[in-house]
Length: 448
Image (cartoon, helix red, strand yellow):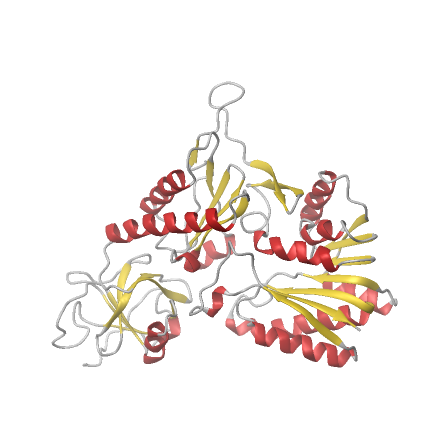
């Protein structure tokens, strides 16, 4: 292949001097078949894709080849992915902004937009059928989970009659995809007297992908107006997890509004919790309220006042909880340092911090943060106490997280037993060939 000399300009290559444009259709001289817009990837990326991985990072993009008659292709385009010998590896959604430049959607090359949308309809139906099989009685769950359901860039959560949609890539945040998803949801969920579909983007992802803000109006609503015509559909509800009730408001909170992936871990924590409990990074009280079923006192800690206000409202929804519960607005690191220094001890501690590592470069700092939190918690637990410790950073794999816990136990000079190693609830499945999809770790420890 002749080495190209004219470099691509624009956001896709602003920091990549080694990414080049080649002549349209000329992935290599004498290629047997033109594949339209194509991306040549490194050997390392090609090997990963052949092993079943689904992402290509910007650092592994070698060349961009527009279709015949075009000078470039825009972010969100469907492109054929090829190796350095022009052998096709499949089709992907291209981003000219994200570090994840390519997200594979098919093993077939040259997939058209029409064919992609038809595939989305079929995969949506499969995802909804899986949830109906796994959690037939649950009305607060994840219906679609991006790559885990072969639908990269699409996440849908359900809270009773509210479906919250996130379109997280340039290739999915488009009107034709929105219409396809709405139609698929209406068909897949079956007849419902009340259904409202709301798009709610992740602000950080929207910034990284340079996505426009979606309309604040619901994408669909069959909710009957109760007081006159043109009454807006309600965007709040009360949902149930493990027999406890929680508020949900589609216009506030993090992500899609609640951490449904922790559903079964909440219940597991309640089984081990006893005595005096501390829930660090409680958010809206998920772990704290579950532990209040079995503990004498529970203290929930979070840096967000608005989250704690919702936690207090959630407490009011569950008046039969036996524990004495209070909330503390504080930074987790500062409070744990203060509590440890004062000689405070607990029987049960939960650590559920936000993702410390939001990029591969941040992983080393994240490990230090996890080490500090877990070391202090182990020192503060009474003999025989339980530590339920979590990480939702997909850049920190389980093996690294367990090593953090091992070194924390050694430094704390405590004998620590591993009772359970858990992940996300089954409505948040992972893909074996995409380790990043196995992001949530929940380890239950007994500290001697």
